[in-house]
Amino acid sequence: MKELVFVGLGLNDEYGLTLKGLEEIKTADAVFMETYTSRMPDFNLQHFEELCGKKIQHVTRQTLEEENGKLILQAAEVGKTVFLVPGDPFIATTHVTLRIDAEKVGIHTRIVHGISIISAIVSLSGLHNYKFGKTVTVPFPETPAETPYNVIAQNKKLGLHTLCLLDLREPENRYLTINQALRTLQTVEEQKQEKVITPNTVAIGVARAGSNQPMLKAGFVKDLIDFDFGLPPFSLIFPGELHFMEVDALIAFADAPVEFRRLFR
Image 1 (tube, rainbow, N blue to C red):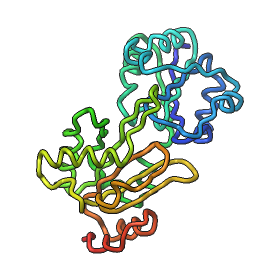
Image 2: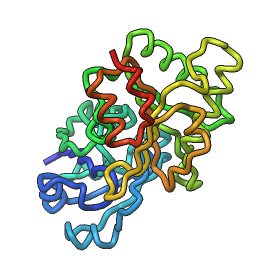
Image 3: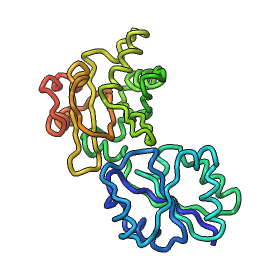
Image 4: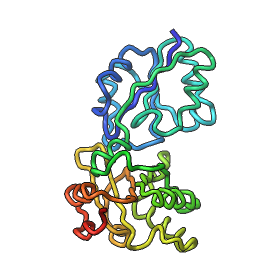
């Protein structure tokens, strides 16, 4: 049967995979995995292969984007193929083209969802899920960051929170830090002068979501810009209007200063 199953791996290690996902891998004829869209710090490939009893073929960004996933589609033409993706397969739009291309040539596709950074952020922070606006990625400093600045501004006008995903270049083992992201956004602020990212702007830095030791720190930009968040992966949140329960959660879970109590409505 021509079939391509997209399976989410979760956020941190091989134990984030669902039982359904494990079963799909065990019954597959070919299994591929990418690691360039997100970092899984404690993932052990050898142990993972032992758990599922399959050899995992690693694919790069070039395989998916420049070669249009040809290797994966060829495998799916002759048998059940599983494609493993960090997090939840389609939270980012990276792999939608591959799924469309598969359906166009008669390959049936299915999805086994995994834990997403979006749901993890909500769970860790205590912020209300329905109050998040558009998500945006902050690029490395050499790339203009006006788009994320504008998205944060638009969300704030609506009273909504902004989740900022931070850029990464997996082949270079390079990950944009929370401190770098804040400085990059401050550079845009200096140019635009719209008071979106000021020293007194509230922000929340998140590191290693999904691990046993995540880091969550809420504060003002002036206090977070030199804060040590440890190892990646990193995310950044700019809250919109805060409910008093959200403030209580940030004080309890994210070491927010007591001054946050004046922020709720």
